Image 1: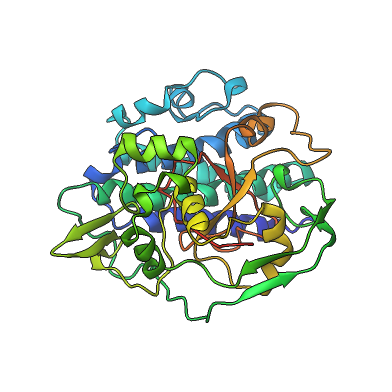
Image 2 (image 1 turned 45 degrees about the horizontal axis):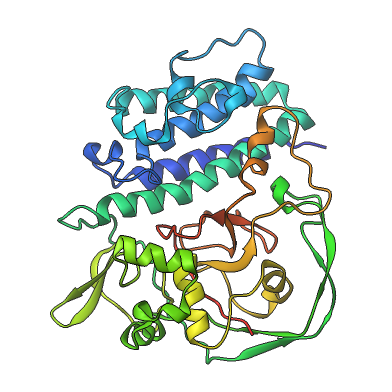
Length: 386
């Protein structure tokens, strides 16, 4: 039995949460796109609205006419079968529609969908609405990380929030957790929501290994830097070595050497670095080099999932040593929504867990995030294995 009020409440709460993330912004902040991987906040607002309009209202509501036929071109992201769209690098050129017009579009679709769901909800529509809710939660995390990149690359380093805390302390004493060899089930196995890349549940054989109970801290990463970690070619993958030399990488993103000490930009502004806080904004290349420096390695995503109930996680997306590949029996959905995950299963690394920017009730032990190895604008961190 589908409870209509429940899905409508979750939908409205999700929409409100996105608005609250944008509430501290000034109008000028909504359009900026410093680099390709960062989308302007205004685009996120339009895209998540387009998603509900395109995949629910236009498909299921009889006689529905698009709010503005031009919006599909500017707010579609990568769904090729849904029509043409602007290049990702051009999103920052969208001075029009205005922020006010995008919010009007957003309010209209929210109202239209709420009214439609009250009388037309069935299992198929419920499934797509649920996907849309979690799609918007993904963009809420992207919003926060993109906002941090936008403000963190402003020469004035303006503060986003006085209250957003992104640096909890790692209070646990270091400990290696031992996991015995065996056949373990991996993947989602239940009736609650998951993305298609978490399916199908299957067995994997693991040899004995150890995994750290805690994340690598800022202080530990400072030791790596002080020891010449960024200058030791033996620690780096070839691509990683080329990357740090080409880009001049000498520290985690947002770190600055100021008056003989390291400081960093946070969403609460320019702050001293706490050595006991988990290091963040780390690329896979840096994570792997640090692990090798510690005579350790990164866990595979299977090792992480098997052990995750024995340590705390959720402060940082944790790099694994696993390439982003389909599970046995994986089948993308038919139609446009089949482009959601499967088409990206190449040249990317899997991250597990969640981060301080992840929305409530969004991540799971089986959740598979994925990024290219050089990216580090997300709240990424390091857990070691042996």
